[in-house]
Length: 108
Image (cartoon, rainbow, N blue to C red; front, side, top):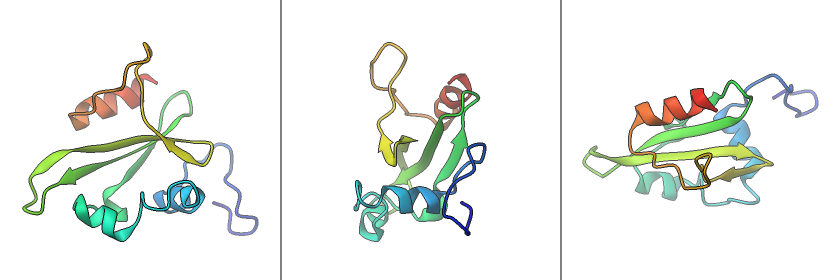
């Protein structure tokens, strides 16, 4: 984000903090401390990746209180919102492995 005018450069990848700021009105609880604590996440848990086509995705491990991985948070950042991720055929993407998430991003 450009500090002078708070606008992202069209070619840059936003930080997770930029995304939190942009989505807070639509999703006030997504990055809430209590919500993230429930999933054993912090802001630093989230990775932001841009696909070859320019789509922006975020992902993070979800863990139980004992640190055991129970899945992943995976969303597409678009229109100041975090959208569920769908396959090309319209079915919801099954994001059960980090390898699958990274491959999906690389393919889209």
